[in-house]
Length: 299
Image (cartoon, rainbow, N blue to C red):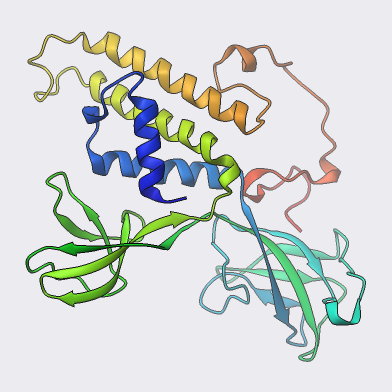
């Protein structure tokens, strides 16, 4: 899913309740990024990687010496460990380590480790580790040749357009395109960023993006003393309330599409829920982000 497509389609949703220029183009792109981040924290992707043994029980997960190439500190968590790793060509049966014999968040000297309680794989053995990773942005195959005098960009730079439609340097966290070719000081080619989030969740993401749009617009109108909007005749508090309500409606649609059972905080659905319930803390349910349980840490 291209970042430009997500913004354009979310703009179309917004047109039903407001004109798109309520927010600048860069601001709308930022809402797209925020929506993917929020979605990704709740619905993490899974990545599986083979790790060669080191003869010991500890395998570093964080820092430059991480044994997992796509580990994201603060977000990733171990989902399961297969040891020894099955050889598909030999038609091996996978052997997964049981909960309790591995721990995915052992801490030492500021770093996190995978700890194996009863195993110490040798340098000729592999374990297959499945872990959660966030959905990310990367350069797509959709490219555009740009002409801009003395642009100053280098290959692999992240860029975005400002409110005057001029291209400017950006970061991995704020860019919308990535430079692929620098033809001259006045011309370059850039690839549009895309996300690897499932296309089946496209419409749900659009509603979450539109929710972010409306929240940003509501925040703008709540600043009644803002000199940029204080001189007009718009009823700012009423408009802020209307966009806040519309934001909740878009978020409700997102939650429904994603099958999230509970209502948004403060909604009728959440208010109707029971004040308590029974949870078996020993079964280690998969909370988003790998949060710790009452008695057990992630293992």
